[in-house]
Image (tube, rainbow, N blue to C red):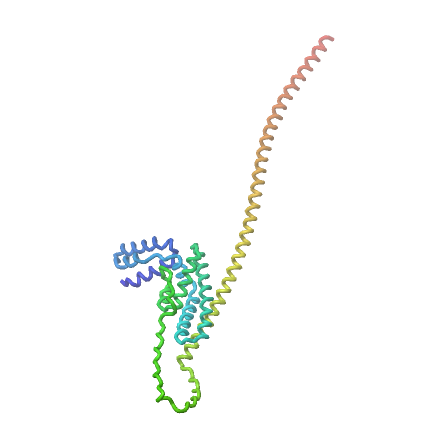
Length: 306
């Protein structure tokens, strides 16, 4: 039995759930492992911590946007390489891309979390941004984040970690008057700049690739945000159309209720009138019969007198 593999599989499943479902699912998996006689696996699963909302949004971004995550990790490596080489121009360009891409990915993470029914406040969104900055600056934080199993937000370090310390400056010996040259030495001719090494060329190529990837990622995020705005506008239009249809249905239902009430009243009136007609017909028939009998009697009496 591979305990690590079992725990890894369960953790991958659990950290894909919304925080509200995490604890119950974790306890159920731990109980299942205990029932199967896997005590060590059960303890490891029970020790998994429920993620915060910021951690959930960050994990969801890693799971749902693997291409953007890969490009983001390359950008972090490029930034650290630029810090190592102290390349001011590259640092300026990459730092600008850093803020653009972090903002775009944080918005994407927020939209993904809200799509799962998890409200993301401004403080939670800030924690997601801090986590992204940490992943850019620190390779260990990048590894944690890219695993998609954070339990809490990450805090970025001050500056970039994993960089070599600057070489100490060797003090120059003081020049005494006796050692001073009688005549100023001619200025040496500037040495030709050495050709960049293969490693430097490879590093520059990686930086350029990371820059292009970051630009493409930013463009893709912008396009998706435009799609989101269009979808939201379409949703608002459909919502308004539904509201108007609901109002129309309500008005028709009101008219139908009034018509049914009038129909019921008309039926009652018709029934009452039918009864009156029947009673009147009976009364009229009886009266006619009496009148006819009286006329017949009168005729008989008149004939007898003659």
